Image (cartoon, rainbow, N blue to C red; front, side):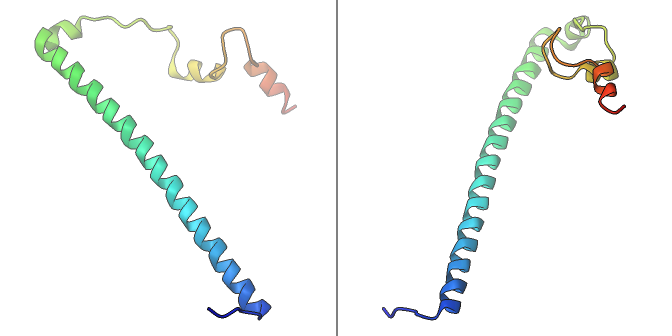
Amino acid sequence: MSKIDDPVVTGSLEGMVADTVEIFEASYFQDITGQRVRKVIEILDYVDRRVNTMIGIWGAEEFAQVEGHGDGKTDEERLMDGPQLKGKGLGQTDIDSLFD
């Protein structure tokens, strides 16, 4: 094995190694993300099968009679407060004042 003394060649080789590592890191991240997405899809599929089984056992008519327990807000009203805890965080007026 011969040693490379040319700094231009050495710099190019180090750049290629860095680029290769970056490609592998990105691929690894995508793989992990794909695995997590696949797990979520499997869980949702499992829940969907269970709900459909319950509907098959009890009948669709029974599920049509079930009333939901909502908060009475419209979708837009729910988005106005964000995900903070009740009584915590900023209100819309506080946010608007930041732009004044």
